[in-house]
Image (cartoon, helix red, strand yellow):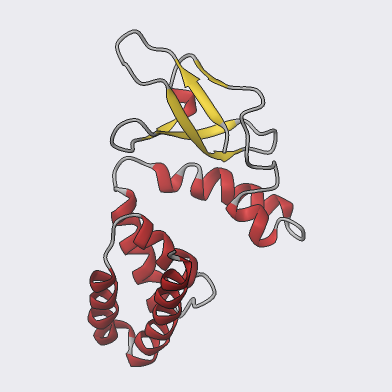
Length: 167
């Protein structure tokens, strides 16, 4: 993770973590980690500078690059910059709300390849296990029993993985 320094006389916090970096490792979005997490586009944060040498993340480490950057680098770049670097960070919906919408859409459209990633992201964004089960139960009547059944099987695996990761 890259650390970003931000100096603003009106604020006491100064450290942000980079959520995504562009092809040239330019920070696209940062999150302050001293207070309540808040998402910013680095272009809207004046005087933000990446600290040299403060990286635990390689240039190849990003959601798009990890998923398919080896065979579709342009699509990986669009995924990282536009989907996760812009769309997910728009202020009109919280990350929690975006996770609800995304899980519901993936379930209803039978997109089981992407569903585990977004179920984990939903848990990370504050959606409870019970809420995820309820959203799937509710959508069974709108998207069909097979989509709900498949989503519950995926959710069970995500829950099991989560339990196995805890110390």
